[in-house]
Image (cartoon, rainbow, N blue to C red; front, side, top):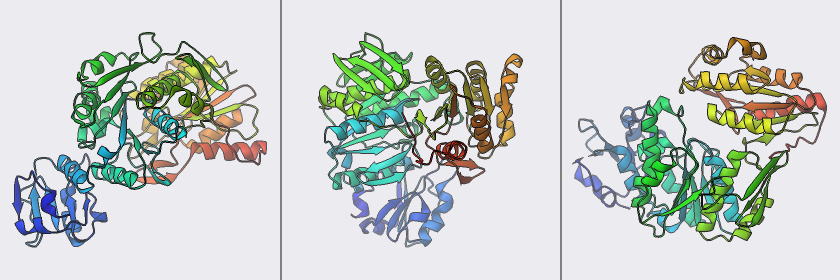
Length: 501
């Protein structure tokens, strides 16, 4: 494809001859540039792509797209100046890959919690109905048999278009996409044509290090329903809203008249609501539309996730009977209420809960199952919103019987300072139940050694993650594997299999 077929909205072009060149690819990472590629110099939160223009040119970039008109490039390299590099990246990527989202049924899922679980449940429902489905999400990107570890919940626009193109080439008809607030704010999903959008929930103290305040965060989430879904060229679009969320009214208000509103929740006002439900150690049972659903997913949060996925699947043509059967055969979701068994006489659960609301919901669910004691290991991430640290500390000390405060992903912060932010908010009369153990492996080991028959040990915060970020280095670390190894050494179960929910 020639460059002139891609570049249509430039403010200024130096070296017009470049427009007649064949383009070999589109890149925003200079390290990946190949000869005759287009390099788009995105100005990110921490890194300015303009600093890597020379590197991109040395690797063969024939065109540089930037917002800086005074950028200097060699005379044989095209310089294209645009208003917004991110929007341009999304636009030219969609054209380059021939608008693959138009050839797929695309469901976008946004919200503070539940995106990953809902996306995986929905994908599994589609597959149980013999529908090939791709997935873009927090844990990984799935295109047929190809699985790519996730770097961002929602990747950059060119990566999204590439994945969609690969899905089309592989005969995949449906795609489920987790849509983060960063992606919405930065325009990564521009030129993606959605068939449906799901709103799970929204809460404060999430990504405030980026959005600065809750109003900006809310505005970013609303943008999916008041801009991205309306501009999609698909017909018969659906907005699937959790009606129980306190902010549901804002999302419903922002839905265009030509988009079908679908509601779900525990409220009887919702189109998709359970007539009854119950939880036990084995999972959740609920009645929906006269059908009995049995799932190994546990807790109210997962019940909401199931309802959202059911609503989306049925509205996109899957029969309720097929959906019901799919739940009976559905396995666990990595790092979401994932049970680790190695023959120990107590229960061990790994969960991704890394906000105060998620942690409270997790502990409330576990408490409802009447454990003798709850032993909680958790920490908070560095270089992230500090305001949620004291909130998590208060909830942990209030709802757990013993608390082991440790490191999560400290990144560039001092782990002891992060722990201090957590610990100092805990009331003095509850501090006696708390231990500070900065080494996460040691904290997990201590809690497992302290546990007795009938206890529940909760390892919270990292879930599916297989690393711990210290400074800028990713160190191998998987809570599930660490716990399993410690338990196996102590209790001698040699099968090495996790029993997960």
